[in-house]
Image 1: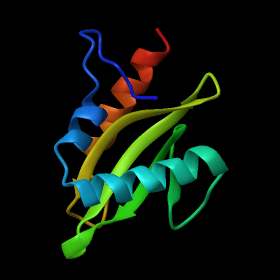
Image 2 (image 1 turned 90 degrees about the vertical axis):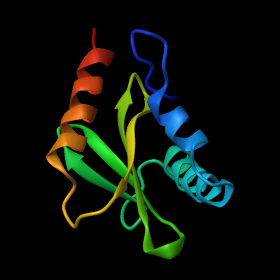
Image 3 (image 1 turned 180 degrees about the vertical axis):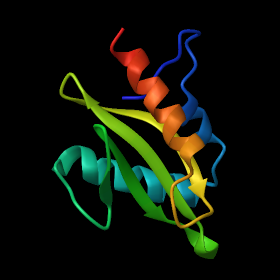
Image 4 (image 1 turned 45 degrees about the vertical axis):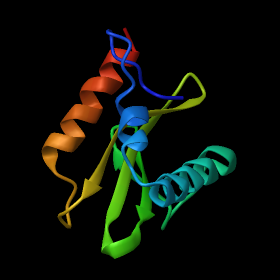
Length: 106
């Protein structure tokens, strides 16, 4: 399930639509692995703490995609996605996912 903003937007779905088909397929496959096999551990999935998890996908040209999600009402909700460019997940990316998580509970 995709997080939906108050305005009806689905940022992760939009991000995925902007990806190349091969990248979408790889990311979608990893999301399905996590969703259907929950709980799943490394290297596909890792806890970020505070109830947040990430789906980890290696893409062509050494790129790394991350999709941050939460389990909410027994469903996987995709909160945020990005191409990782540093070793540590940037604080801004985590903060955005945390904000969206809080919006789910309203």
